Image (cartoon, rainbow, N blue to C red; front, side, top):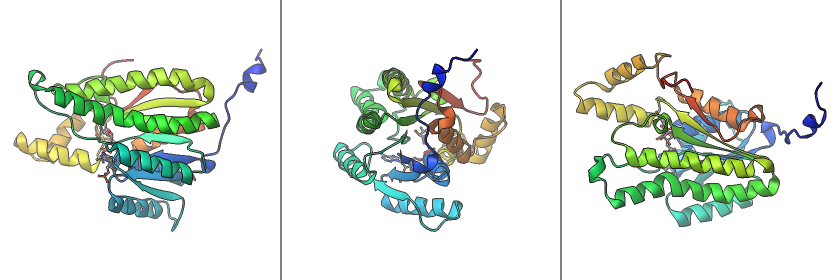
Length: 280
Ligand SMILES: NC(=O)c1ccc[n+]([C@@H]2O[C@H](COP(=O)([O-])OP(=O)(O)OC[C@H]3O[C@@H](n4cnc5c(N)ncnc54)[C@H](OP(=O)(O)O)[C@@H]3O)[C@@H](O)[C@H]2O)c1
């Protein structure tokens, strides 16, 4: 027999329509796809990137794709790696969101990782990777989490990579920070779960964003093959036989921040078309 008390412990459920979401790195690629999807659900989206013009284009794209002419999209330009800019912008956002930020998606490129060989990596390489891939993200989480804790409601999703499950050779600082982020998010999710806050991570596989396509073009050139050919050879290794469309990744992010995922927290979910071989 079902214990009726179980139902009394259900978390607060909110329609997507009443939510505010801050999405970092949302002028392009995966972040933009997530913002579009949430906007379509009726969420008020605060979209960030370093460049206001890119954000304007992104908001036009979101409006056009969702068949609306004006709506609840706020453009929040700041560089996630510049502490002063981050602090000023987050203070402004907090004023604008009337004390409620229900969703935070931490998604950025945040500076390229050094590709030097292990013995050539300097202290500076490690320090910079720590700042770009870890500390900058923690700074934003800390500030927004304080709002979520007051409201006893919130969802955070960090965008990571399958690299942290299966590290690629030559990327050790980046992979190390990604794994540190996983540990940080896991322990944080444990602490705040009882306050109605869920924290998860989405580990993406190859996703056909502009940045990935130009990276493959450049890599292909070095290997003496067109980028398209390199893309095809990668696709062959993926059980689903193709790269992800950014919208497919946006849909998973939207699911993780929705109340449909109300029993999922502290997880690193993989969306890679089946590329990773491990069963768990
Ligand atoms: N695409 C893939 O195949 C793939 C695979 C695994 C993991 N990922 C991860 O997914 C995330 C997004 O990748 P993506 O391919 O969607 O990248 P993308 O298309 O290049 O988008 C990156 C976004 O971040 C913004 N951005 C970059 N640096 C920033 C900074 N310092 N401060 C604020 N905003 C910044 C960019 O906007 P502006 O240029 O306008 O600032 C852009 O909106 C990354 O963390 C990446 O490692 C991607």
